[in-house]
Length: 217
Ligand SMILES: *[C@@H]1O[C@H](CO)[C@@H](O)[C@H](O)[C@H]1NC(C)=O
Ligand SMILES: *[C@@H]1O[C@H](CO)[C@@H](O)[C@H](O)[C@H]1NC(C)=O
Image (cartoon, rainbow, N blue to C red):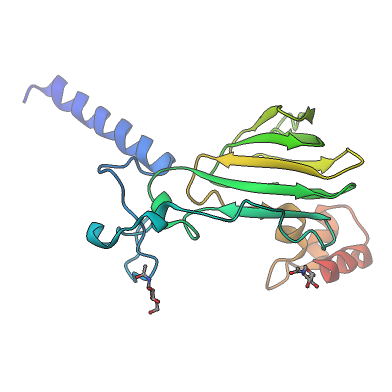
């Protein structure tokens, strides 16, 4: 092989592997329904025998009504991800139904592995995200029925119901397992706890306030 084409191949390999590591792997077959019982550890989940795949592997009946909104957030999230629908394995897709009572909200959080499209079906929602260092720019929008908003992967974002009635939305993500990290829980609810001396400095807060926050999350 000529030296130049050799280098081209290395470059191309780097590009393709880079691309497949950055997002859910591209399917190389019609489907790879997850074998949720397998003890094999791979990025994603191994496929079960296609002969045992049924329509139920692709089916979800969880979106008929709101989840339980009797919580501090007055909201609920019903995810449809690979853990619930094994047919999503390797397809790079997930969705969740979000319900908010009047005054309901989701606390600031991020999805480590998914960009989200939020679509409002009923009510009115304020949706916002904040860019990363160094700008930390806050983008927000009031979404009415039929509106949609993009939350780029990994950015901290929030939703709150600003209607005087229930708000219903769907969040679509480009991962079978987008993940969620609620900022307050990650910082103040870490187990084992992060040093309150350290957090008191990092957040420029009295240590008592930090400890109070730590007791809440
Ligand atoms: C996984 O194991 C459980 C318990 O042994 C069994 O009921 C279930 O059918 C298994 N699921 C799959 C997808 O093989
Ligand atoms: C909803 O959640 C609350 C708080 O966890 C619980 O007390 C209540 O039983 C739940 N309601 C239903 C219908 O599951």
